[in-house]
Length: 260
Image (cartoon, rainbow, N blue to C red; front, side, top):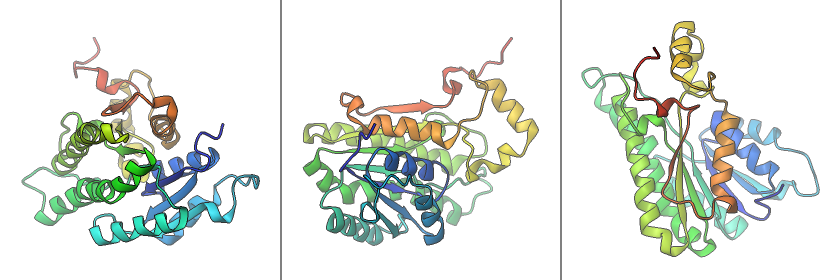
């Protein structure tokens, strides 16, 4: 099914993990895919995994852009390049993020500012720069937030604050721009098998503790999250906006009480 044929989709953080899986999924569904990241080599590795069905995948329907989303001028220039090449923007996936661990007594000001800038400011810059084009196309935004934006975690004060900001930014943009025909939603993953969660994957104790909390009994894959993103971006979700969708195997369904 090519739900996004002739649609232009921007994906930030497309060089690995959830961003890579999402870019591949949109490519399989026929989109013009714009891969945004800070490293050319990782973006090209993503492109190599695109399907080679030459009836609809060809060299002209993807674009890689080196861009630091934490720098507003770079974001604005990237959006200009996309419109110049494809003429429109239909979907923006704000996936780029940074996990910063530490309690408030341990974090430096630089670490706090970095977490806020990449996770929250970068999402704001992308939404602001792309919104005029999305209003024209009646497009939509998918923000990658986190279950950490829905509740607290130990030792993650900066990341949790930033992701909570992303979750509420999602709701507010949906309210402000619904009458413009623009839908805005977020997916909120829990632990997912990406480079960001390597420390959890490599620790048997941490993995066991997480799986004990997870009703489905497994850690999510990037492809699990990409499936939810493409659903929310598609016309199948035409009546869904302002939603923060947990994609967490049921972890957020629990009150935190242990299983007796």
